[in-house]
Length: 482
Image (cartoon, rainbow, N blue to C red):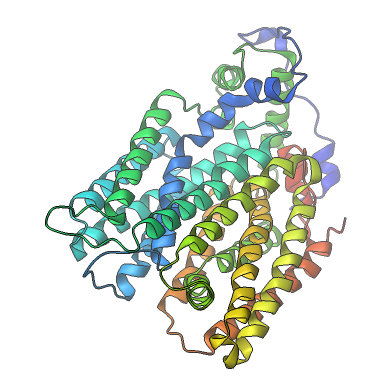
């Protein structure tokens, strides 16, 4: 990639005099509520697909063992098929994005999600029906993930980009995981009868149907195309119209003109970039790979083992607490990411997660502790802490994905990072585990978290409230520092 000086020296290229919408003045947004209301259309537009990711989080939890279907025989294929479909969807989406409008991808993914939910609800006890539902949902999530992250980066203002990215992507997955833990816990002791066959799988199906239907509605009525999409096609007035509609009130202001001018500079800079942005790709792929360690089949095995010995196998409240903390762990840092910064949030999460993982691995190292109620109680509460801290570690990757890559490579690199994350989960899903697996998993995870903490101090940039071109320039080199 080119050096940063070139990026900073690009001059404005627009003149508001010839635009269809002359700049107007609007009252300043002095309070948080006014600021949110001013920029809410940006969240509604990009977030039209967030509910699809919620259904995806439910299926990830399903893949990790949070399912309760009477007399249903699972195998490796049914547990990993969602990951396979998600990988395929992301790869196809990365190539289709330059030829197909994002709204069409949103609507098609919503339809697939809706169909998958119907299958979950109606043929919940058939292997083929569940497999088809999971393939459809995985493909829908992979298909919509790439355009959603691209749209967040190009449509959301710099002051809100980190917050909106984290809430719409990582918090949506986490909410789905929490809902699935809730359904599994609620129906754990439920036994279907001829008079009542309604169970957790049907609740899962209904929730996915609601997510698909609402996503379809929001995508049709609230979706606004990226202004960059129109600028790349020399449709400046259409780009202005998009920027106008992406704020409330929907008028063309002087601030809107500044955003328009900045986007033109961003495109101009990227047209002169011919590098492959390898540093950014490697950093984000490694980050997303470690994100997958926070919630995997071994996480559920450790949690179930710990609470079964400490509080009893029939008490499922620890599942709900774990899922809730996992979700809250993404909400809290998302709200402070654009003030505290992406890097500090990530480093806090990495350090705490690494230390906690070492403690858990150390307890599992001695097999005698597996029979100790007090030691398993420590593991259970350490897993609660890990669930919360993992959210801090994970959410920064959402913001980084929207701003790290050059324009012409962005869809492919976002897909690559997502594919790496899914591959790690898939590999864990196909492995067989023994009594030493938990010790090895958590000690290894601790090593990775602590190593990433140390490397992150040097190699990860701070991009809070930066424009896309400035944030992108900070990823141009391996070394960044504070």
